[in-house]
Length: 330
Image (cartoon, one colour):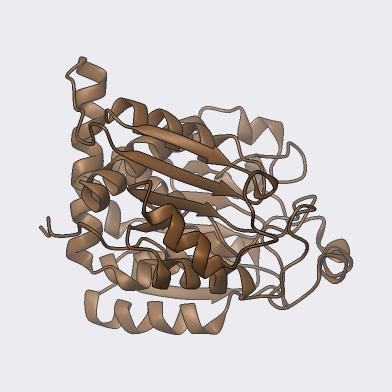
């Protein structure tokens, strides 16, 4: 267990060891029990969290704000037009915010307010903020990663399968969502799975493969941890004998929004149905990071059925992020 994470950024799981990830998960489970039993856990009394979002969110915003309240602190939410971002550099913004608050959460993705980023530009902004801020910077999604979501995902898998979770086949399946979402989940889930020694299969159509930089990193880690990371281009192959079927759409790497939408037109059949669970394990669960589109991401039978754990997954954003904030900002 590594309890010396204070002051560290949480931008990519590539910067976190097996010990680090397991420490966060352990604290997340502990804080979840404390909340359920009514035990106070104000670990960040008087601390303030700044939240800069380029695009609106339900789960990310509410879980961070609620989490800070439960930890005894306070969260401030900013949209780009509420700060002087057009007149001030990211370097100066980071330096200034660091004098007022104790941590910065950044959700930096393409939006009408900030425009369309080329692949890697949003991550570049987080890296600049990290370099010039004297307080931890936490990614709440950028164009390359979504580490907080992935921590909640793994927490959910552990809850459902216990100590044997690493032996279970997890299948992350690309689905033809209505719009392209950044490939942060496949990137960070692959990295975390490789680090922890999990069995992960990623399935996507040709042209939608995740960034090879992340996949190769994950495979190198898996070779040391005993995990398995693979990419296939067939849903049926991916879900066979899977214990987790995770539907998630993501944008083609390096493509514009319009190019991505045109690329996905032939793949509308890529969605999760009951037939996929017929070849999975009897205890298989359905996951989706939400928002979820019925019929597009998966059929209502799957989304609203007994195998679905999407609201458990959403709840665990709260507990995982509280653990991250407590360890980094304490």
